[in-house]
Image (cartoon, rainbow, N blue to C red; front, side):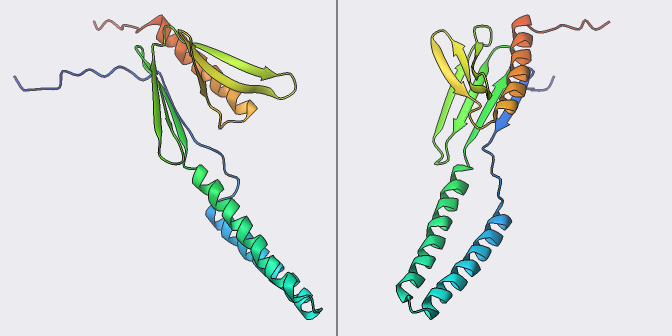
Length: 170
């Protein structure tokens, strides 16, 4: 007899790692900043040649502000939200862009998915509701993605409520 692991992990019914969308990657950012810098410098040079030399410095400031805004945007892209469902628990783990971790563990038998919808735009908010607690989820997603995500999450919650399926081995 060998010493084995007595821990029998439960099957994972659903797992999703959600991250914010970013339409511009690092290479695109560099290309955009080079382009804006060249246009800004050329425009500033034109003002300098017309004798309006104080304007030249302001064209450098606009590039600095745009760089700073993109820097904040890229830092916020580090946020994640992980949702896992097993037959006995639903775990939501949210990591902010600063690294702060918040985690909720709920019983999937008592969880309901609540949706806040808009007639024109579709699903705006998704909430997990369990025993008076209301946890907002999938805020990174767009309305169509939220609808698809909600459908998959509801299917996993229904599978957890049905319980484990046993396959007798002959």
